[in-house]
Length: 448
Image (cartoon, rainbow, N blue to C red):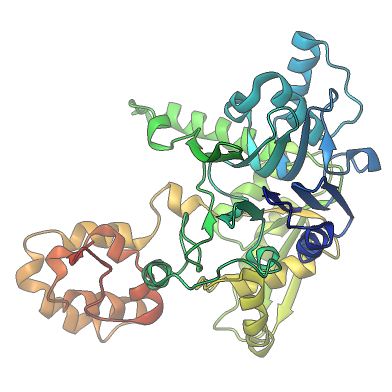
């Protein structure tokens, strides 16, 4: 990953020292290089983690060949090779580097915001148009890469992390109580909210422009509008199509000029990603897993079995429960705002250990969400049945004698307002993390 930070200051009150301070706070995101553009009004700062084209010429801020546009970019454009060939053939562009950054800025020079429709990747970037005197910030389709922004005191500030914005002592950092309620419900602060009332996360699939005409927000991608109205009903053809999609996705995300690896837990998702990576690579794949000395937490044996079967270069790391607990306070500094995902600590630990061997890694996150693998989906359907109204207390009594997971369901079954609960409540962090009864987010005095 890289880190970006910057501002558009109409009053010219922000100096280069502030830009450097904001950018330096993101040094952990980009240890390989730093770069700046500052002209009194515009400040663009970049910390680089080199992934594609390690040459110094690919450093940022990066200028388009006609010098009209300047970009700072965090992420990776997976289809940059295909886009580069199109630009060469259709527009006779002679590239000076092999970086995806140059492909992105030259695409922008030709297509403008329509470039966003052509990208396959994860990204957050800012582009300054020196002719229009306008800056555009954009975030990828799914919101994989973070981007915070705020407009205060006739200036726009943006950054990959909140800690960079905290360097601007003139900003208002009032806590947002709506964000706290959302956090208690979901276990995180969802976009467009941040923990601060006057600072927002740019929504996935959106971009913002800022200049003499003020701030304007646009949506370039909608998940619901891109879901096909038809679906495959034949098992064999569905399986073939899924296999093709997964192979393409894993293969294109393996493009890299630095060492590459995979986080392998031994579950279905990460094992499948590893198998496809092995299939599509001419080199032995590095895999990494965390094992806990306490057997109740340890699942590393499954990862080892998968690694042995696929013949990967496996790196198992064993940690103790106390090691994980020591990281709890450090995690809060990393995320800048409340975040209740229990996997954050082991993910941090395996990332830290893997970094000694590789620069980037794939993981198996997302499979349960895409294929409705969480039990809450099934429980939402069960609890909505009329018969549950009359038998739920008896069922709850039995479940109270079972595991902690079933005890959480038992608490729901006793809930008087069960009939008003939506599916979101069965996913709720309030139930999973805090175990609260009679909990519901209220909006205009209505349960939502």
